[in-house]
Length: 181
Image (cartoon, rainbow, N blue to C red; front, side):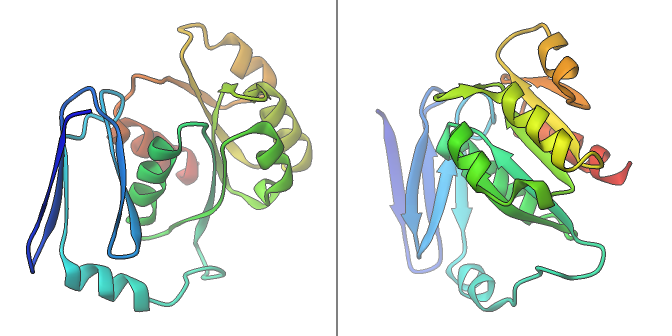
């Protein structure tokens, strides 16, 4: 794996080659950098911004907040997506899962929008979609699929399907659109 981490008193940057995925703990936060699906090549955090982020009160329960659930087996992708969604002013990632079992044990039913990978290590993401649709029919569901055939996810109850090769910004834009409808 080819990567370089550059640190100074003011910034820490993580540089990755385009076929590398890295997750590092930086100032107490996990920082994920990816790859082709996310189209990110570097990440830079200011120490002051991280300290400020630590003291910001939780937005949980704020009026108008959209609760997001993520079910994705690639932890770095999931963490990077959570990071990007949390930067949006009215979104809070309230639950995350890497397996069907974790999704069942999570508070997924309380979400407004769910992003669910169809291929999870211990089962099919369509199971999670069906169960979520049964417990929370108002939830908007985005499915991520390696397959170019969106039929399985749509039949299970997903509102929209994106390929796993979609950029991180495309996933965030789709979540935004689903949350607004």
